[in-house]
Length: 386
Image 1 (tube, rainbow, N blue to C red):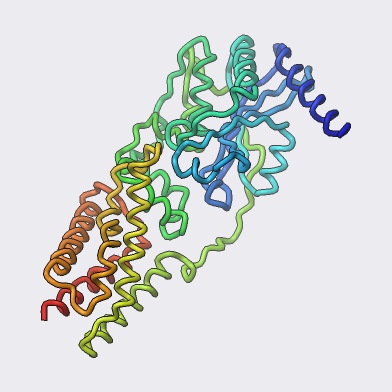
Image 2: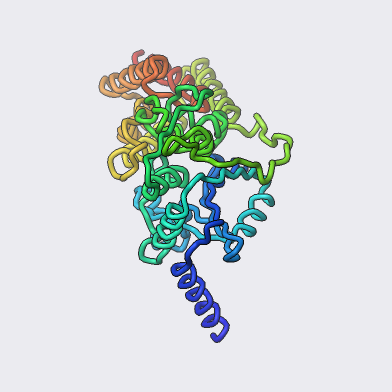
């Protein structure tokens, strides 16, 4: 108990001393850009502020986007878009060693700020780190670890920052920007492209590119304030080692869905030869697509996530498929059942049109399954028509 009280006392003392600290004229403020990691939650990189004052013995970093797994109803709040994220404060050496261990590139841009601007930024970060201020409502595209670098900085500079478009910038949609970091034939991409709707298939403005850490680096590199460069100097503190890719097509979504599609087509071919219908297969397919459709609807209408709206995955994963489970268990569907299956075929055609026109880009991992579903629907209609 005494040890715990001592640690708490030291923490409170450190917090108080930081809050009262006045930076020296030689203090430096920089933005760190961390390269992508191996896991999905690290795939987009990270940004953090670094406050370094040698004369004060201070070298500390502040980053946004931390979350606490002990939060009550963590997963429910995460799914609803109501999870509060936190600002973190870590000694620079600890942060550096952590990302070196993870083999992630660390780049630093020292900002060209006045002494008063540095102090205001430091004070603001300290204010945000107070327990009552630490939590904030996170948004993947508009209020994340990267956009916080820009937005917090805009609050403390005396002159407006002009963010010029980097010469190498290519116009892209939000989804295409995500695909820069996530392999389209990966399970992470399958989940993202299934959960997020057509709203992210609109073209991101140059300013909106800064939801990704690497574009914070690129935009800051050419930004100006008071007719002078925002960045005084840039350096790479650690360069990630090149490792062999460990991804395998065999375990990818496209591979697995191809096997499932071949199984569906094989059973359909056998049913055709035997002039029968494997009802268990149809019940399984309609149950899975119906349940998936329910999740898509809930993400669209029952959460605060802005990126899950207008999700046309409903054109193939349709909640009303669950109502077909009992009719499909019977030998014949009847006229209504056949009409519903024709409706599903039309939906698949609409999905294809949405994809080609560019209204929404879908997960490539679903392609074999969608083809198999279309053929299976045609077979069921043909069987029940005779």
